[in-house]
Length: 238
Image (cartoon, rainbow, N blue to C red; front, side):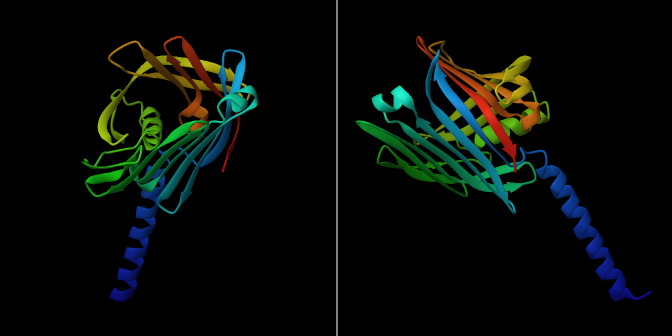
């Protein structure tokens, strides 16, 4: 037997198997897509949200942009950019950069985070911060990707360590059951989850759609007597 030929063939086979295994693992994460949502308060339309999730090799970019429209634009002129960029290895998400930029009449706020090894550094409201982190650390946007993955795997524990506003904190979600949801983009089979908080002053519920790899198709946020609802209008898989 030609040993050189055998060795080359063996390593080619191993490479193919490794690639297929990694591809199968990566497929457990949400696939690339873009979507548009309507943001409203009761019957009043407040604005539009555009989201996109893209991959380039083992890098991901999950970007969201919200812009006030109509009467809300006249009152506030609010615009919100939220981006997370990082790397994917199998089902492991490692954020590298996060940006939350809210601008409106009379001011705004920026939360800018850079992740490096076991440290997160950045600026929140123009104040520098540096915090020690663990290997499972996320930002608020990359957490959505990990939540979608965990729902696809039917995991019961939905707890995530994140950095936000210059501090480490923990988010925990509770499953509320399944619901078939009719939206302008179609009918989706969803899992309802809510953010677990220590008080009832605020409530946030997500409807995560199986057809969109468990990314949200509806979000309802209540704070005091105000209820803001975000519902998908259309989407396209990339």
